[in-house]
Length: 307
Image 1 (cartoon, helix red, strand yellow):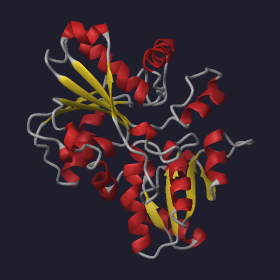
Image 2: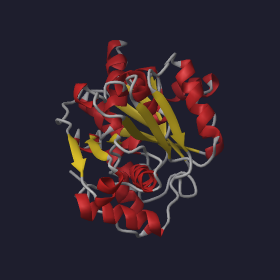
Image 3: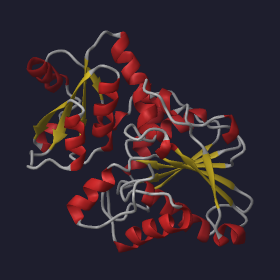
């Protein structure tokens, strides 16, 4: 796998934390690699190893037009000497946005399909049709979440993280949450803050843990009230919070996952949802390349990337 930069934990100071007697630290996975950022590094690590061990020379994956996963797979596959195909949800638009241009520049072949057809991405008939078109390939699912990804994300926590009482992460496809749940210790609570609207996420995560036979040693919780209207939805309050966080800590966030994650943490602390004396470790899952596309799409400027 491509070389990773050292990951470190950064302590965050704030009068709110002193008032509530809570310690807050952020794990800077956003700095692990400039292109294969954050949790994507861990999700792809063993998938690409598996593809190579099976002597596959092409990986195929799925994602939206602004997908961090698509951009990361394209770069990582190229670095590992593999070809890549990205099946993109929705019609092709010209010119390509930053994410898709980046993926294409790293050798990814882009294949655009309708949203209706995209829903069939897990069906064997659809996958066989893709093999008829492109030849044989190794499939990495949308968002990268599968058994190999969970094995990778279970390595996010290390020995120095044993002292934390709470581990807090954003939830999308659930692969990072599942990996953290797998490595959770008895005294720890894992909190997932969903970027998706709807209480279905509780059952979805339960099913994911059941499928992969993960029984967390510690407690797990999912918060579904910080989605700001749904996936990729936002408002001025969230954007203002992202800028304030950057001004205070010089750490960039995105409005899809990490902005909502840290907004949720601040809200829970201020409303006494976290017990006094707790020590929190927030997982910064990266994904900041998407900020460029966000600005292209909305005209809203976001803080500069951390790398």
